[in-house]
Length: 340
Image 1 (cartoon, rainbow, N blue to C red):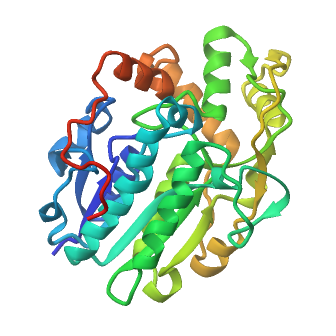
Image 2: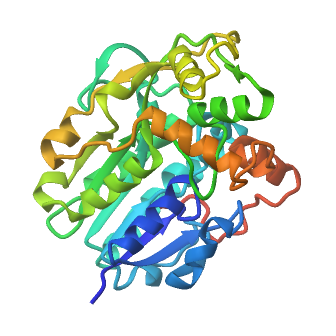
């Protein structure tokens, strides 16, 4: 009998890739999503999944009955989007996900994996690992830390809880995003004929391909429970800690346009280098895709017309702003802040 996995936010950038990997692995998949960005990202697998259009602040416990694992990716994603409405970000990214974990545990779910972010490290010098102090500089990062602190104490012998702090993601996905630095620079070169940096290029960031980070969720639920229960793992690869200005140079080099780089912009207050030794040591996890792979993924997707740099949905903050202004991003849910 197939094990059933719930992916909240399953129509999103990472979620739509993860759903397909789960199906390929033989899992039965339920997708809990508000579908603010539409259903197109799951169109070709729609008849293979059970879509549940609801908010994580309103989803009912019966949805989790008979489910083996929950992968909790639903969130107002990235730092700029989180600042549009900080209270809504905390309601969804923190309280909503803690609520999901409580409901999952009550329903007898065996595994719960929280999608967190390396952005929790903020601005720090030196190399950082899971034992390093956090320094959240945005509402988005703060909500991730609060969510970690809310779900990890739920771990026990019958409910395995793991938090994955993902590096900055890149590469083509079925719900494409061009507000991620590697994708944005590649799309900029394709559309404008030059790589445009919106910062001064000095900050350091860790990076991970969307397929690699999606695969980490599966490796966690298939791992020995004792290795992952109550644990936090950074997800990425040490070699993919790169300064933004060097990402720009890589995009130009890979695509044969090294001179077409516009360097400028304002300093970025977020900068951090992250170690990924723990996930490699404990789970044997290694990334399979390079920065160059991701750049070519995106470039080829643009060439083939699979995505468009000018699509209004490919920049999360712009689309959320539109939904807010048009009153389509509303709290039409029963939940009002309580953790059940």
